[in-house]
Image (tube, rainbow, N blue to C red; front, top):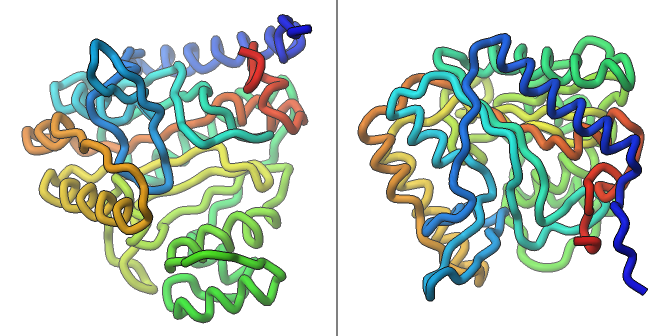
Length: 319
C-alpha cells in the first residue's frame, strides 16, 4: 500500500514555516526585495559538479534551475538593487540523507558588499534562525589554506597533485577512476577537513583555490591566486556558498567554455550556456556579493535530524 502521508512531522512542518517566515522578516527589515525567477530555462548550469534536470516543453528541451543566480544577476544588471529569492531549486543525480532532487534555497545579493560583509550577514541570519532550536557560539573563520593546514597538515595551494593523492590514501580513502587536482581537494575537504569542524558554531571557509572560482572574482593571496568565495558549515554539514561576484563578461564566458570542455572530457551531457547572463554582465553588473543557503539542510542541522525527508513536506520518494 502506498504511504500517502507527509514525510515530516506536523511539528517539523510548523518549524519549517517559522523558518521561512524568519527569513522573509530578516530581509524585510534590511530593505532587500524578494523576487521570483523562472524555474525553467533554455540554458543550464555548465559546472561539471552539478547536473540539471531537463524537461521537454512544447517539443523543446528546458532545464529546471539549479539556482536562481543567473536570472537574479540579470535583475541586478537591470537596476533592481538588493534582492533575495526563497523557493525551490532542482539538481539531478543528488539523492541521499542530505540530498534531494528538489529542495528549498534562500539566495540573496547585496550591492557594495565584499566576502567579509556577506559572511557577517550570513552569520547574523543563521544564528537568528537557529536560536529557537539551539544556541550557537560565535563563528570560526578560516581561509581554505588555514583549514587544510590545521586539519589535514598540508598546503592545498602549494601541494603537488601526487601529494594530495598520497594524503587521501594515507587516510584510507580508496578512489577508483581518474582524479584531477580539484577532485582530490574536494575529497579531502569533505572527508578529512570538514568532519573536524566544531558542531557548536558555524565555520566559514574563505579564499578557495582559483581553480574553484566558479562565478567568483580571483585575487592574489599570500600563497597564490585565490577565489573570493566562502562556504559556511555547521559541524561537517555545508549550509551556504557565497561569492564576491565576477562582473567580467569575457572571463565568465571563458569559464563556462572551460566547464563545457571538462564535461566533454568526462563524457557528461553537453548543455547550453546562458547567453542572457553573459549579455547582462556585458551591460554592467554592479559590484556585489551573493550567497545561497540550503534551507532544508539548515533546518536539519538545528533540529538534530539526519535525513532530509524529515524536514520536507514530502521528501525524496514520497512525492
